[in-house]
Image 1: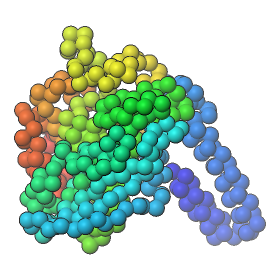
Image 2 (image 1 turned 180 degrees about the vertical axis):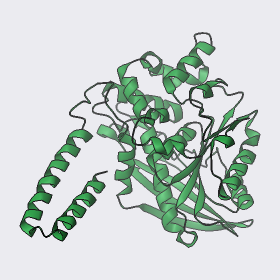
Image 3 (image 1 turned 90 degrees about the horizontal axis):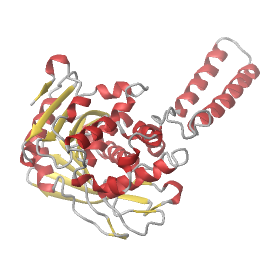
Image 4 (image 1 turned 90 degrees about the vertical axis):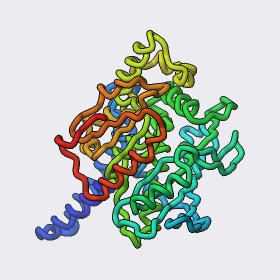
Length: 396
């Protein structure tokens, strides 16, 4: 954001010189405006005016600003090896995406990922599919390398081969196990997410970077930077993103935070308009929570859903909370929303809270076996220049 201010100041200086203004006058004008803009930016960024435990505080800038900040740092990665598969070559990289530990409350702070790039024999240019994958790379504090289970290698190679599309798998999102503050208990998956939410809501004015969704999205963005740098032969500059569950949530938020995302395919994350969706789930279970909600119940999230601090959390983690912000146009990209009819967390009609019918496709699967086939269709159609409009929305 601040980079744009600097460009505007440079343009102003050029315009003043072109009009014949003296260099001294030009210099003074630019210096004064630069001083004012830096002060205003600092005040707004630190929320001094209106961000002191106020639910009206606009935190929609937090995720995009953090992603942009990290994208301005040197990219740290290493090519591990290259391996041939049937009609596909896979390159294995290690990526160090970021150092994330708000208030030094989280260890390990260094986020590491395996990034595998699948290149078919006849690869299409310009577009690639990015798969947000799971995995465990810090086994209770000791670094290890674990294989992701959401999308295994044979599945990724098959997608790449069948669609002639370059596929990038970024695993270990989130890094796990993580230990928060003085808990002395390594956590993973929903335990980590819920703990990060609880810590954020304790002091949102100080811990705006605490929600785990933020580094998860940023790690994905860093993997896209790596891909663009390593795949110049194919001019890769835009991406379809897909992921399951929490990584499906990362998929949604990546559309808002990163302009290189051209379409998304979120699986099994039927939780947009999160407060309304959670209330609907609770009522649908007869005033109870599903067993899979337990990590959030354990952190007391259920008691804070109507609180001002949860409202602030939603401004960061809920894609629909970006509708009335400068990021609203990003929500208009094509979306293929795939949910499970027998999900053990979400109820089947949660889509009522967010399905637009304009740019969205919604698809309900009876089981996980159809995941790959449904993804293949969308990737193939999108690579053919698919454009979303009102007549193309549907629910299966």
